[in-house]
Image 1 (tube, rainbow, N blue to C red):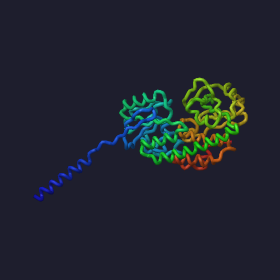
Image 2: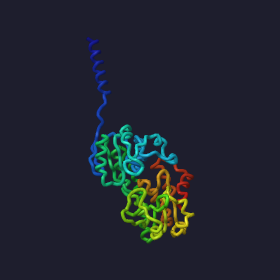
Image 3: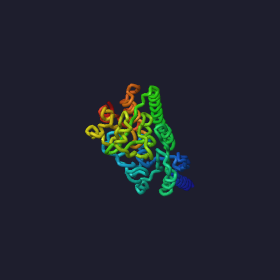
Length: 351
């Protein structure tokens, strides 16, 4: 009898252990993105993919360890600023932009719990997200983000990824920095001291970021953006104009994109006719690992705000630019920026 009772107890214990090892369904939650769309996703999300480099920049400081892949391969130079593990990630491609399409086969193979999109709300966005969700069986989630609303974007991202505390630290830094720059520009405008600026791109320098472009937010905030054009193109290549138009605009300061013709400007007779060039008031936008103004137009544009404040209005700034830039690199890239690295970043960017 005792033997039978022991055997029965052992059988029950084995049955309970067996039940415990069975895979239980993962908890899900219903959330609403900024399209707005109802999205069903895992409540314990741990693996994510992104739709492009803009989203990737937002995600890196909060959940880079969750990425199952990267939108595009990083340059070798980016290794100075970013964690080594990112360079081992699968390249998935991007949904929007001119550097190739998203590789859905690679995406499915990486098996993320959710695909996140952050940035400008494009007209076809909701339709695109729904179609891709249906095609892949993976939820796609969009968060609107401008320079001003970047703190809220982090709070939303932290909420769906269960990283509210880390997201709040990033959001608070952004909020305090934005408020500081608003206060600076209020004093500048009170003195009628706002500078006129033109941001030039391309190998000829004759593509410009126009006022109505999503890419122009930082420039519009910090200066009088003279690039007023018809049929504004809201993409990284900007609107194509000619040197005659630039002469007519005649800005106080010229800014050149990191991959443009900055190095050739000093030896160009044509560009010497532009008063900002003749007076030496032209500069190259810092880059590392991304451009500080618009390439792509993500959260790193806060670096551009801080830089433009010091470049254009040094008599109004009450912050130490190097300290602010160093803190950004610590928080958003996990990078201990050295004095040598900082000086290299701003080599052609300041007086």
